[in-house]
Image (cartoon, helix red, strand yellow):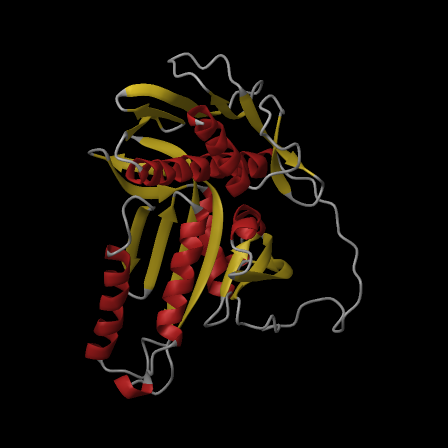
Length: 335
């Protein structure tokens, strides 16, 4: 049995562990990778696997994939490998992608991931320089608005992927302290000039990936925010339910009396595609108080509401901003 879901995909490989150290040291490195993978939270990491010096992860939220990539790189970067018997520092190279993948299930658990986008992600890692992280443009678009101030990106342009698979526009992932110094020759001027923005025609697949990742972010925001609301006042009881992979309901009780409620669901239908919000809870998803659809200014993707709710901004919204305005819609019922 299998299902599909937009996921953040991480492929990593350790460079240099097979040389310069004895068998025991190599085993220790591989044991660390296994420990790193085993300790990832199940609620954020849909699938994880490691073999020898390699790691593959699939996360429900691409932002989690990015966080794990940075943590994994930092561990290798900050260790004194010579002290542990290696003649050269060990480094990890990491590739990131985000798209719809097939999740294979056995006995109700995810046992594997498959699909053309898994293959694409696997072709990025081999071309990444040691100690670096590269991501696709789709991944970049999904995470860039939520990591400002923490993570930077450097546009590498179109790059040939491993095994002559294809070319893909890639970005180097940098933490905030790193300088965006080119690690390999990149076409373009070597000095600061004003460059025009190039308009882009986003594919339906890219828009669908953005929509589904947005719903997952809003869902996770509501689940976390509901716990905070529950703990804020002993007179409150907050009940959250996930009737399906694409629907969330929240109901707030004050001293046992229902005072606020909403349901949020993802619609993939050609007509009415979007993330819908209703202030009533019902099995029928045929009416809503607000709806978010994917919008583009020709340079980046965003969400835009219909304006049916007075608190809904008409400006383009990130996934985080969309989650906050939907949450505001629930809270206003309590005021």
